[in-house]
Image (cartoon, rainbow, N blue to C red; front, top):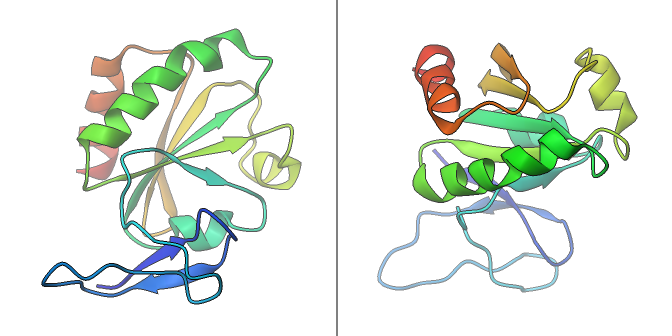
Length: 142
């Protein structure tokens, strides 16, 4: 399966080919290096949301900069993103992306929404411990 990777420099969506023998992927538009998984959550927007979660397993953190519990859970999301290569972790700022937040009925943050191939499979509200997030991953993403 070919992954779609958004360029960190220009935002262009690129197909990530299978790379062998030390080859490196570059953006088709700006030629910046691409990484299939850099160990950090992907930043989502209203424009990129559907495409980014369309395939595979994703955990999206709906958050806001002013939210204390959101800032508390952020390091856990970073840690899980670096530990789990099988799941795409992403963050969506609800203040900057109100359409997606509204579409998912976000009323309390932080909110973690779990997706399989673009379909919501579960959610966890609040700044919960890492063990609870891992249990939700097992439950909702198998």
